[in-house]
Length: 82
Image (cartoon, rainbow, N blue to C red; front, side, top):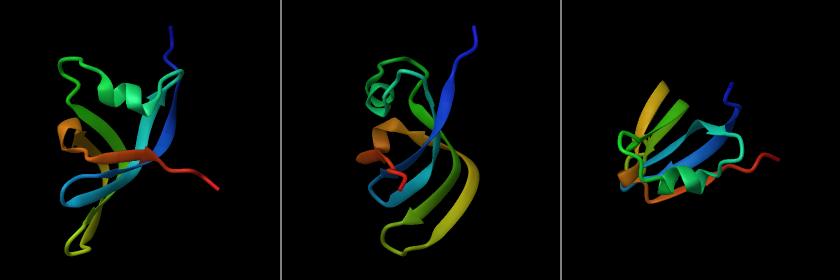
């Protein structure tokens, strides 16, 4: 059985950074479900095409893949496409 997923544009805030990128969200799953899951080995959220900005210095860098630690996320939301 093939798992159907779609890329979702997200923005996440940690203490010192803003992370923007794409998260592969599986069908019939909400972003809040991913964050609230208590599954061993799922401490990190994979983000593709990530841009990381330091909140204090405004320094920015881009990486093709980033593992974002769920425990460091203070705010996260799906970006609304216009």
